[in-house]
Length: 143
Length: 438
Picture 1 (spheres, rainbow over the protein chains, first blue to last red):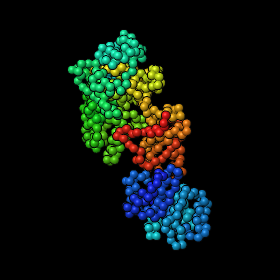
Picture 2 (cartoon, one colour):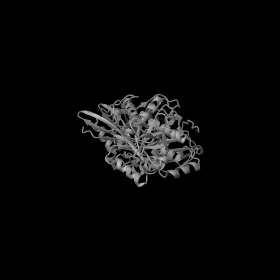
Picture 3 (cartoon, each protein chain N blue to C red):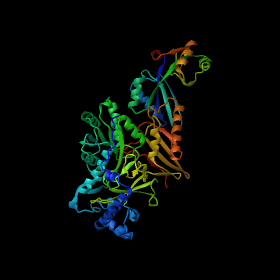
Picture 4 (cartoon, rainbow over the protein chains, first blue to last red):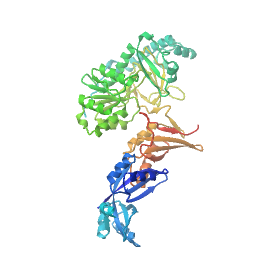
């Protein structure tokens, strides 16, 4: 149960982020979750949107370099140690977290966190065995 | 891939014993020097200033006594100042606009046209061309020598010529496929564009009959050659020339692809040190200089091309004995000296096209911090280069940086920039911004 994430290369200029979010907005694309990794020169915007294909097309047409990646949308218990439990389970299975970021939205009891793992399939089974709730895109949209 | 066959159009001239050729060159050089001394004021006064008369030029070895000719001379002498034949004997004008806007022209007698045709014919034959072939000429027709030059050569070999001129890629492709075109001539960048467009149109290259291409008028690399050969399933061969000398066909590649054979019975090439202007031995990198021998309308003595390359005299496996020119590595006016090292944009292009997925669109920015030169290379990020992590991008940046350093001999800061942000100019990209105040 993977979720498609899109990543966009952005040079570090004033207003770059405003420009891209405006572009998505104008095309009716909602940002469900996003994170930015950056260096002094450039950044990578990663986001989850309801329709990755459409977003990719819109961004490509506007001249951006876009890449799609599979990630897991994980329901993490919203209490102290909640995230720790999940990370420990992954670590025990020797799965590395390459990056993670949390959702803009959340659901009462759970915090929503996006995980990018070096081995997504193994990660999914580990989390399922632990009884961790994963969401698919449809469920995310419902949040 | 359809097989192109090595054909030598004029074995007598192309495979001539090198001593016999040298004798012939000396003879033709003497005639040319006399012709310009008698007919062209600029050459005569320069030779007088240099204290020499035509009698001082006896063999090819005396060539270095002659003064150089350079592009500004053609502008200053525009339109007819350098013509060595009466106006009534001139049957053709070709020219180029030049980057500064002032035109330069060259005049041809019928003999000059015939000689030029012979030179291009050898190139077409070397690419396997014969009367069995259908040659699509996609170089521009007009004052530019590319279109008419290749047209004449392909006609002379007996091929069926499709004079498309440049532009309208879809129409070019439809004609190529419909007529069963076997050979094509255009710039290497346009050949790439045609190949990519064939793919985008969803056509299968197996349905085309192309076997070889003759590509010139701009510098390219073996990587570009490989891409063209892969896309079009052909042998992609290089051709070199310049309007001042005659046009395409000054030198051309054979199927061995080990440099371009100079048509030495019509031109004498030299390599000089662009700073000291002294001749350099075979094998050394320097500026290419040509003297025409036998040309009537507008002979050129020691014309400085400002193109940098090497010459190799060893006999080629194809059987030709003519000296071979390596690809042009750059222009003397493109050459950057960074921290004392000579650097050419073409080297950066080679490095970038060698790394999978990396965009060949780049800009070199040179600054001086204190007394140290600093080179930054901006590279556009393509989707193939995109990672979703910073570390993946940094690995790529580091790889580019290391390869640049080992190829150029100077370190550069690699800056990744947004796609399509480096300005593109028609055909030729501007690849250098030098901010140093020297």
